[in-house]
Structures are given as structure tokens and as C-alpha cells.
Length: 383
Ligand code: C2E
Ligand code: CA
Ligand code: CA
Ligand code: CA
Image (cartoon, rainbow, N blue to C red; front, side):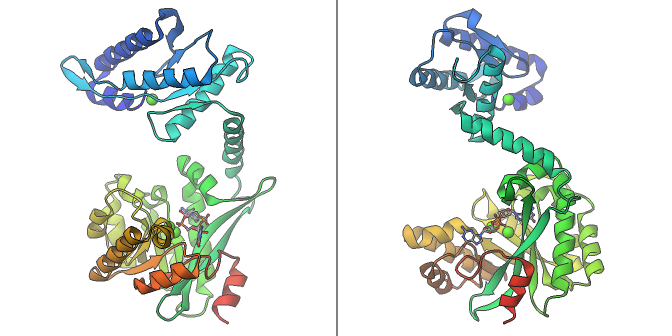
């Protein structure tokens, strides 16, 4: 079930129990046989259909189950809405015995929930491989730091008007001993679940500050900060310490955060912003335009820069007018609020001309350079 926990926490266990009973009854009604439906603990149900293996038919059944369970419930005077996600494993292809079938159906269920709730997924080899790789990464991430497997690459940030390099964004790279280079997208999420991200993020911050302190004068360094790390009470102290230890001037450090920081709903967020501001570091709002209500965040937090998400840049030369209108509006907004703007993910000359024409203040993207090792960045930036 999706969102069952919310209902249970809000309305209490007796409502939750009554709700689960009704869900079970609906399931039995659809399947048409009480013996085939079971509850396997928590808010998960299992349906075993001994005579069905046609995937088309099973998919339709899953859709009907989801639709049926998503109809409103009335319980003890309350109207409740929940939903369902479905994972399907088909015997004998997806498992030799019931135990394996259930395990694989569970993997499919996890993938269904991950792909946005309220859908169904079939088990597949690829899902299994992805799950196995995730497990390997999860296990190996724990001592990756101690083993010195992390490195920072630097991508130049270019000032649009003068075409000069104004600094670099530090991007984390994990050199896994057997898999090779692992992209941050595949491990940052894992690190965030276990709070490992705080230790990794501390290393990134200290390393980036130490590197940048030796760079020529005005070059800035931008560091990505996970919401999990940002809302830790000790975060401003860590930033102060990284600055002091490296001797980097605060105004040369730019912290990139996403609106995930606000969604984390921490009571310390505002105090953290104030503490960082009084340290004198710069703040950038990353991936702007991909979230829900970024305008409110712009009003409430002291950002120095807005990073316009790659999707707008990419869309702006193809399905042009709308994306260009959005970029134009963001630039105007930023200017009115006295903030800089970076267009991210600029890959082609067309895109570069376009974002320059729309007067963004900074540009980042493959058109100038990919993220690269420090020595290479310095050779390019200072030539
Ligand atoms: P991001 O902060 O939005 O970083 C920009 C991403 O776009 C980087 O991917 C960069 O390599 C890529 N990129 C830059 N220019 C172009 C371009 O022209 N075209 C295309 N297609 N891509 C471009 P990367 O390095 O794989 O990082 C992905 C994400 O991982 C980052 O997105 C950031 O959210 C996260 N990340 C990276 N390093 C760190 C870190 O040290 N700490 C934390 N918390 N997150 C990090
Ligand atoms: Ca659930
Ligand atoms: Ca970033
Ligand atoms: Ca971004």
C-alpha cells in the first residue's frame, strides 16, 4: 500500500486495522478467491494465482487492483485515501520456488514504488542485476573514504560577458576497485540513506577548500552540499573550520544546495542560512526550476546565485519558445533580487549563443569543458 503509514499515524491503529481489513476484502472481491489472498505483514499483501502466466492479463489485473484500492474508504466517520503499487513475478521463469518468487516480486514492487507510486512492475533480470550492484555499492561505500577511492574533478564556471573562467564546481568521483568510475548519481542517494554523506561531504568540502586556496586570486570554488549534510547542526561550524584550516577567503567559497534542504523540514534551516551568511560564504540554489515551489525559497533564503537547470537549456533550442521564456523570467527575477545566474549543461554553440543572448551571468557545460582533474583545470584556467 502507498501512504498507508500516513493514514495509520494520523488516525490511529484501530482505523489502520479497519482499513487493512477493507483492503483485504476488496482484493478478495477482485481475485474471487479468499485462499489466494494473504497479508504478509505491515501494509503488504500477496496474491498467488496458480493458473495465470499471461503477462498482458496479469498487467491488466494489477491495474484493476490498483484502481480498486485507490477508491476512497469511509472508516469510523473518516474518509481515507490510500494507493497501491504492485510487483509481479511469474512462475517458473522468475523463481524456482515460492520463496524466490516472493523475493523477486518484492524487488519488482520496490522498483514500482521507486518509479512513482501507484504503478506495477514485472520482475526482470535487469532489476536483479541493478539490485545486486546497488548492494555491492552500498557495502563498498562504507570504507571507500578510508581507502582513498574518492577524487574531485573540477568543471570551469565561465563568466558569460567576458568569456573568462571565474572558478570551478567540484564534482565527486568514486573510483571503485572492480566496477571502475562510478557516477555520483549512482551513489550519492545511497550515501544519503545511511548518513555516510556527512563524512563524505566533509571530505569534499575540506579537499575543495584546500585545493582552491592554492589557486590564483579570484577563482571561486563551488561545492555541492547534500540536504542531509546541510541540516546537521554542526554544518556551519564545519564550513568555518574548513575555511580556517585551508586559509581560503570565505567569499571564494560557493555552496550549492537544492530545494531538498527546505523539504527536509528542519527547524534549524533558517539559523544555518544566517550562520553561513555571517561567515561570508556564497550560496547558490542548484537545479532551479525542477522542484515545486522554488519562488518561496528564493524569498526566504539569502542566495547569491541561481543555477538554471540543464533541462531548460536543453529544451531551449529545440522546443524553443517556452523554455526561453522561462530562462528569461528566471534571469529577470535573479537580477531584481541581485543574484547571479548560471546556465548549466550548455553543450552546443546554439545553446551558448542563446543563453548569452538571454543575459545569464555565468555558463557551465561541455561546450567549454567537462569536469576534469585539478591539474588540467588549472592549466586551462590560467593559460
Ligand atoms: P549537479 O550539481 O547539477 O552537477 C552538474 C552535473 O552535470 C554534473 O554531473 C556534471 O558533470 C554534469 N554536466 C556538466 N556540464 C554538462 C553538459 O554540458 N552536459 C551534460 N549532459 N552534463 C553536464 P555529475 O558530476 O555526474 O554529478 C551529478 C550530480 O551528483 C550533481 O548534479 C550533484 O547533484 C551530485 N554531486 C556531485 N558531486 C557531489 C558532491 O561532492 N556532493 C554532493 N552532495 N553531491 C554531488
Ligand atoms: Ca507501504
Ligand atoms: Ca551543482
Ligand atoms: Ca545542477
